Image 1 (spheres, one colour):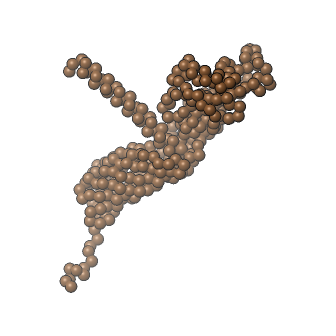
Image 2: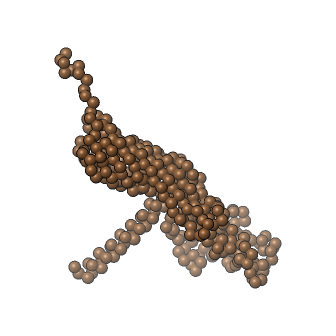
Image 3: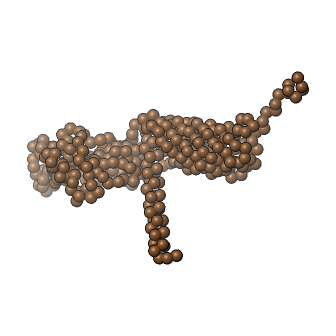
Length: 164
Length: 166
């Protein structure tokens, strides 16, 4: 067998194996959703435990098998407030629908809020060690959310602007 | 009228190997199911099968201390008709799959469930091929096993089974 043909066959086998894994994951996700094993959850990053750094957005994940893991990650990694269901819609400016693919076919959104009322109450420097109350980016307008969604450092796989 | 015409036909004999135990991957049990099927001779060229099965699946979705597993139980109950004289059969069936899903919980005990969690039932159909040896032995097959459930709609599903007829 020529080296070129061997390489082509190996690449084809790899592609089939990867496609097979994706297909199995996709089938498992469909079955889990049909059975009722998926749920929605959100992590409201505006409200954090003492010492935590708040952010002006809430992340929600829809139809995931791993909602409870998402909730614990929210609590542990961000000192934020997880709950079942979708993010609160009040005071949302706009959101970014994340293009990243999840193994369980779930979909995630980051919703950016007008937090001027919270800043007015808490002050602009109520963060850890007297830092800013809300970590950047803080959206103040739709144009700000457009820029955030287009930021590939923040969303390496891309994100689309969505309205609530 | 001849004597032969007034004699009622003898009932068809039962299949030689009327019992099948089988493991089905995916299929009517959603993930898998272990089932028992009893075959009855319906008429000369056809057999009826009644299958009951069950599956239990639990998975630690969350690795945090104090969190609860996702648990899925299914109980498929299917009536099928087998067509074909030899060991290769066309199978057509209808039934129901009873489901119980206990959603996983986080470390604080909050359960993340959906409207479809808990007890439920789905209608299921079977259309497939199955090899069932007349005198018993290994039996196997593949089938299209679509399911329908309120709020979830139609699930184009399928499965493969392997077992033993005796």
